Length: 77
Image 1 (tube, rainbow, N blue to C red):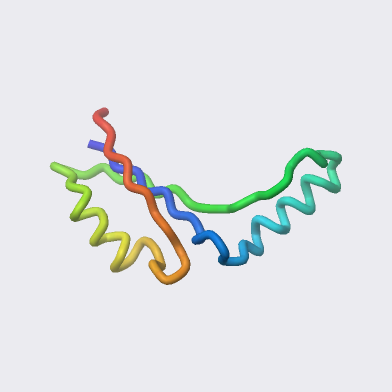
Image 2: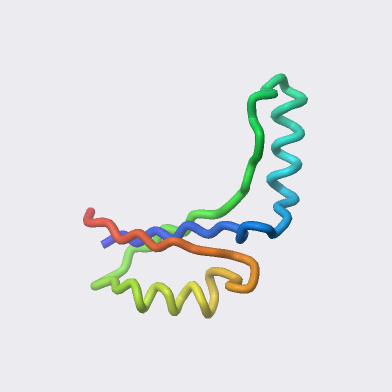
């Protein structure tokens, strides 16, 4: 089965990359863009996935729980 983990900076944490992309988009004429937040997606093939086990992976290695939030999605192939 496939598990996806979406990781984003927590609200209130300055997203420097997002600000750079926002400025670049506006410089290219996309003034309608109001905010940009950059995150990451981790996809894993896992035998018998459990959200609890994936949460442990996030807490111990994949995410920095001090400044990042994450969302776990388990998909059938």
